[in-house]
Length: 167
Image 1 (cartoon, rainbow, N blue to C red):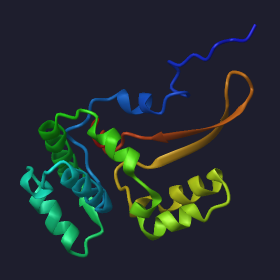
Image 2 (cartoon, rainbow, N blue to C red; image 1 turned 30 degrees about the vertical axis):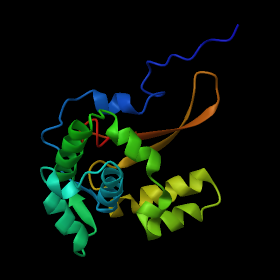
Image 3 (spheres, one colour; image 1 turned 30 degrees about the horizontal axis):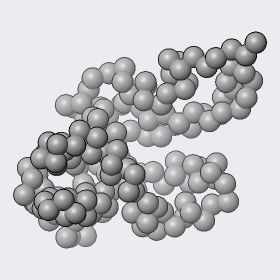
Image 4 (cartoon, rainbow, N blue to C red; image 1 turned 90 degrees about the vertical axis):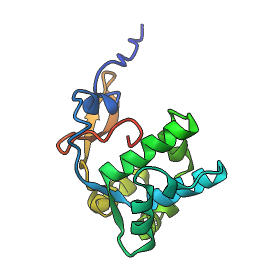
């Protein structure tokens, strides 16, 4: 008889590692400003201007300049305000569905040119700091309970947990 997966084990859910702490206020780091462009487009489709949200004007000015990154706290503030204004508690997921490698610029092209998902993950891990300066990606090759090889991807919580919308 086949043993069912124990879906409560951290090895099967990447978010369990991040959920072990509630450090959403002390988060530090940065993200690519390209994410703000994605939000701006989404809000425009709903008749809203990101600059009208708390912290939105400051991020708009960053995006208009030559700064490639934005503080994660500012991003979280704008995302939470947008989610509330739109009455979409799943806004982060909705934006994630629209995200394409093109939003990563040259890094997106590099990732797309990789021959395998494994090679793309190695490149992402190597160049991650260009787009994400919060918590580092850790990649581990493991074997599951059935002896099958798996890859665990885990983002730590060393610099805090950005929160539901950012995650």
